[in-house]
Amino acid sequence: MTGDNESTDAPAASMRIVRGNPTDDELAAVHSVIIAVLAEQAARGAELLEPPVDRWKQSARAMRGSIAPGAGAWAAGGGMRGY
Image (cartoon, rainbow, N blue to C red; front, side, top):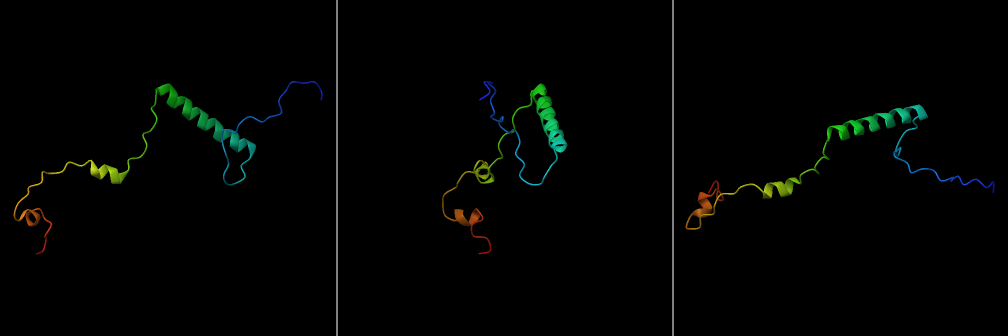
């Protein structure tokens, strides 16, 4: 022990490289661009993007016509096409 109070723990990574072997200069460039874009969006007051719409649920929201019960209603509604 040297008596220094410095921590040897590395700071948490803000990026994770999944593939390839970028140089330190390439990583620094990518990091700078990402930070600049995020800062610009924050300055403009950009809102977070909404999650994508589930197309199955979206079709359930469509307006539907009223149901007309009665004799021949199924055929008149197109359920018996070609018969």
